[in-house]
Every structure is written in C-alpha cells, then in structure tokens.
Length: 339
Image (cartoon, rainbow, N blue to C red; front, top):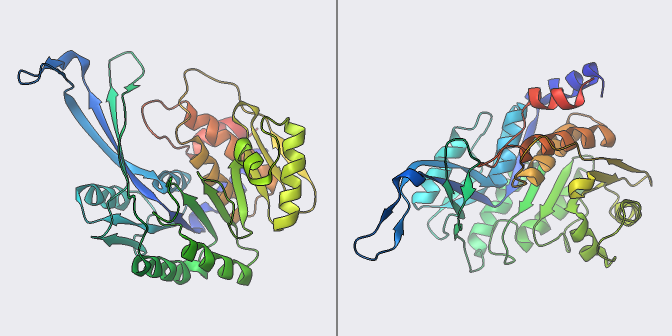
C-alpha cells in the first residue's frame, strides 16, 4: 500500500463512530514472581505470590482496545457487566480507554461479570508463562428484561454509527449479549441501512445470523457450509464466494499461517499471505485485531483488498506481543504496510 493511501485511510479514523456489540469480559492478569514462591504451612501446597494485577477489557473489550489504538474518534460499547467487583474493574478499565463512550453499556445485578483470570509467571529475561485460567461465566439464559434493554441500546446508536462489530464470545447460546432477540433486531435494522458495515464473529459459528459481513476461520466456514475440513486456499475461496453471493455481503476468512481471504458478492476473491514471524508468538487477540481493523478500514472507505492488508498487518503485530492481549497502533501498521 502506498504511504499516501495509508495516510488517507487512517487519517479519517478520528471522525468515525463505531459500535461494538457483544460479550465484554474482564481480563485480569495476575503476575506471579517465582522468586517469591512459598509453601503453605496449613496445606503444604505451593503458594504463588502475586506481585502485580493488570485488569483490562477482554472479549469484545479487546476489539474496543484495538479500535482505540487506531485512533477511532468515538467507540460505543453495547453490552453488560455485573454489579460485582469484577464489573467495577471492567467498567473502570473501559472508562480509561481513549475514545470510549459508556452511555450504552449496562450494569446489572442479575448477571455475573464474564471474567478471564490469567495467572502469569513472570521471570526477568523470559517470556511470561500462563498457568491454568480461572473463568467466571453466566450459565443461565439472559432474561428478557435485559435483552429488551440491549435491543434498545442497539436501536439508539444504529443511525449514528459508521460501522458496527458484533462479537459473540459465550459457549452456551443466549447466556450473553448476542441473544436471538438481539440478533433479530439487527436483522431488521440491517435491512434499513444496507451500506453500513456490520461485521459479525462468533465462537459458536454464525449459523442463524442475519446477512451481515461474516468473519470466521476456515474451520468455522466448513462447519457452517458443510464443506470438508482442511480445505486448500483455493477451495476456501470458492466456498466463501458462494456464501458472499448468498448473503450479498463480504465474507472474511482467517487462515492462521496462510493469511486472510475475502470473498465479495461480485464474485471476486482476494487473499493476503501471513507476514513472516519475527520471534516468539502468542495468538491470543489476533482475531479481534482483525475484526477491528476490517471494520475501521471499511468504514473509512477502504476497498476490501486494502482492508485485508491492514488487518493482516495488525494480526502480525499482535501475535508478537507476549503476556497480554495486544493491540496494533497506526505506527506499527505503517511500518508493515506502507511503502
């Protein structure tokens, strides 16, 4: 990408309003100093002494972090946190992210705050080592009253945003933010504003989603369409092309070390190869950086190939950030994509 074109796309980010609808989590990193290891007198078990706690927005919050790193002017989270300690931490972590407006983010006493508690052994001169995670989730359906409030928040922002990103992070359907009722509201609204980039990603797959921009990995594409697993890049393109024609929206496929691919309704398929590795990697957060960069670029008027190039570079930046769910800023992207 030419430097002038890069500047043109990135330069419009400050004027964008992007909504992020989905499951916001608290990522709580517990940094453990192995030099301070002890043995419990009472139980005889090893004691891990935590010397630092790093709370940061996770799940859909990771997308928010990436949009903020890009300099998006207004970022509108739509989701909920519990009225618990973790919810307090999540609310305050989101509040400190530049560009974030919390007018549409709900606090509720009826749900627990989705939390990933990540113990990390941090030793000078070595990459952090993550121990077994401790998760807090909701196991029962989100009730109708909260669903109705979420639907109203979506309606309130829809006419004023330049793009919307949907992230469904929960393992059990209808226990989080992106419930059937919320998706039904998106279906109706999307029909009234067909040019608005609405990008959806779900860890359970996108079956039953309205025809918006789909973003998924190659395995999820096969599951959704009934295609064989472990397809070649050419076959992934052919399957994605049929799905794009059916939805009348672009389809984006992440292919790990094979890069990214996009099919658009006009029948064309575009792909970019993954950039070379530059050291140790951690893939956590790479997919969310792709979602953020695709939506931001498309909202700024980038072509699909340009959006792919920027998202591919962002993923390359993020996977090289260890011990955290990282982001990619403008300068880091410029180094990788702007000639």
